[in-house]
Amino acid sequence: GAVIGWTIWHQRVIYYKDRYDSERERLALRKHFDYVLQYANDIILLMDVDLNIVDANDHAFEIYKYNREELIGSGVRLLRLPGSDDQLKEVLNLLEINGAVIYETIHRRKDGSTFPVEISARVFEIEGKKYYQSIGRDVTERKIIEEKLNAILERYNLAIKAADLAVWHYDVSNNKLVWDEKIFELYGVTN
Image (tube, rainbow, N blue to C red; front, side, top):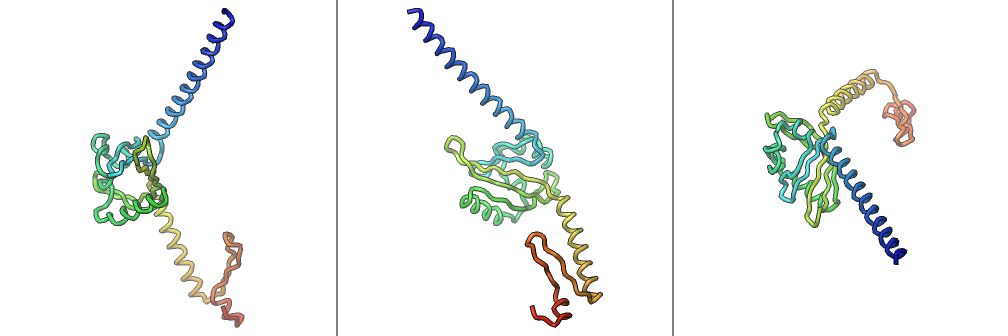
């Protein structure tokens, strides 16, 4: 009887130790994800099917300049420009079809100032209820750099055209030589 009692006791110890370890691991993962959510450098919003903000990370409050009471429970339209409903409908359509979408739009802060934002959004379920998650990044600096690069490229193209030079370059992404029209004229070849 003592051997059977000890075996049952030992099995219970193993069972409860496994449950304890599993629960401790689950809590560690939850704490990790809560930390990531709160302190990420991106704007993270969780919205219900009516597009009301259910939760947001600290960075969202910093960027939009709303406090928790003002932002949580409000509709996402609070952050969007007036007249952008068509884009929002299109994004929701794509979300329903694909489950995820990446797009750029303009958002506004509490003070009315605006900024370009790139959003990665997805739809998912928690306990049978559908939610939308968006992770946004302020792309103001990227847009400024893109504008500068486009201006440089435009000046370069004007200079080449004005100099009446034949130009070619190697396109690394496509592994091809690219020739401009002047090369074809110079060698009497048609494109």
